[in-house]
Length: 489
Image: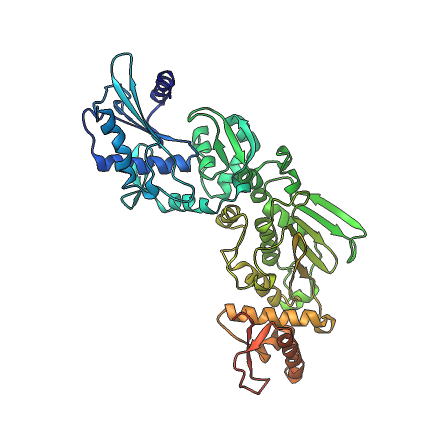
């Protein structure tokens, strides 16, 4: 920076109402404790990351009352520059000062401005193995929430961090992002001042700063817009990513009854989306009989909401011209998303989830929109079994993934593939629940009478032949009492 730029920067910092999480003033007359300097480096670096700042500032030669007192800390320039290496040796990732700026004020006072880079994405900055942060003007340990926010950035995809709209004032940001609803969904009180609202939006990566450290210009990230936009149509490149819901007459796509395009960000509109679908479904008479006459939706809400959430989370945003879609037929619901899955569809039940959009997924889990990692599809299958529904199906196309929930069928209406799929999913569900499938448990799943156990045995044999299950003990010759495992167990 030139002397003019440094003078202007110092003037901006001195005009702040008080020290902030990313600005610290120290008199540092002739010396300053090296260990404390390192702790401030860690704290200011982490806070710069959390708040979307390009840098934080530690200023020597200014009192905490913002009086310029001057500092003679390491007056020899080579000795001052050597500090960079000393700090890097004790800071994680060998991070150090981006620059140490030296300024002589018109009054002849020497001021040092230490330019501290933000913590690397996904890597909190540690000093001698310990993480520090700020609470207002106070130096504190980095709490677990802040630590997790920084670490979660390691999974931030390019799409999520890319800019949806840039060059915005703070007022424009608050017009485009439904910030009151954001705070409600996170269970946090709405701050009374705009600066605190913007700080939270920066912390959640909904927005980033553009321009200098204290310029009132922001960019809304794709992550922020996709989750919290008041209207996705305000973001031209994202408008086509809104969820579409289509109801058809009968079992084909020939006649459309109604179509409802989504408009709000995914987090804002999710509950309303699920309610809209449920409110336009007829009651399920067979389920009412099983559950003693209680009024139950045609499809279990947990299964429906989990599959919709999965479609949002696992979609490939690089696939243009398509969006997540929910299509409702008389006999099924199809939930589709752009992009092929990252794992084999037959392993959805047990495989650790892999998402292209892990940060989006993480936020939706924090908001309780979807289940914890790895427990979603097993709950979908469990709900279908409990509600005596056919097994769900998962289809992978050339550039899409589709999950299908079927309306009730009795055993006689199920075809061979339905029965094999039900058998495989039942074996997998039993296994991940710490149990093992038997002929008896499959009969209960498919509502087959005990006297008809050979029917269940034939289904098991077909599923073994298809390669989806295997005997727990191959030496056991009794089909009726044999236990079975999914092929991957």
